[in-house]
Length: 285
Ligand code: PXP
Image 1 (cartoon, rainbow, N blue to C red):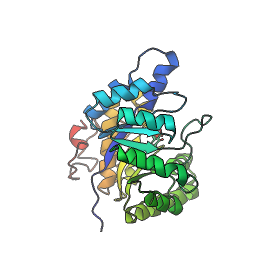
Image 2: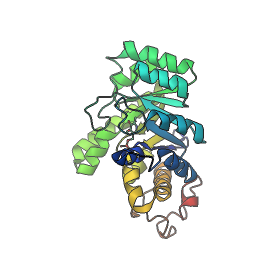
Image 3: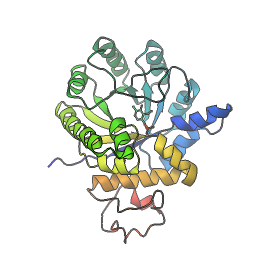
């Protein structure tokens, strides 16, 4: 059996900027959120500088790079403008995503097969700068194989369709999407790619996907920022870390309510015996 590598948690701070921009001004500050998330156990910070600057802005990216102590993952479209900005900001990683102005969020994966002529040079340019490139794609075999052929070191599997189906209770669709993710993660690993996943994840879906040993990083934003409004950002980061650790250890989440892990009787929930090292449960209280 494949031994699972540690699973990193990347926190996406876009929606702190969404709330800030609703009023203008400087608050709430996405950099403050990033610093708090790292203190609570995040392994990295992700931010998406969209062409329309609807949430994260250029100066947020600059400040994130300057002020955080963990890797910065710059989500971006493979446009000339963004490639130029990446060359100035020099993030640890760049996740190339498709972008359409009219979409509410990143609705699908990149068409790596159809856009290989543009993506190949973008991957090469970023890689030459020492930036680790990931391609945000659906768990589709042709896309995965093309990502490897274009020498992207990493893919991020788009989990949005699976998460939407789980939340809507569409069991057949959820199962089909899950099977695609499982097969895609295996194929990607076999192609030599590092495998990440993200979009639409909550505690339950993160715990489930954490059981896939090929996946080494989850990037999560919207759900956590929503929960943080009720219970605070450090608490949700710690609970997500704990959910991921449980999934990685092949355990059930034991029906713990959202964000009440801190107060839960861990022994009663069966967590006491779980032998989970990591940042998760040690800090959960
Ligand atoms: N990964 C990528 C590539 C994304 O585009 C997004 C959304 O910005 C996420 C992860 C995080 O998705 P969510 O905000 O739904 O957790």
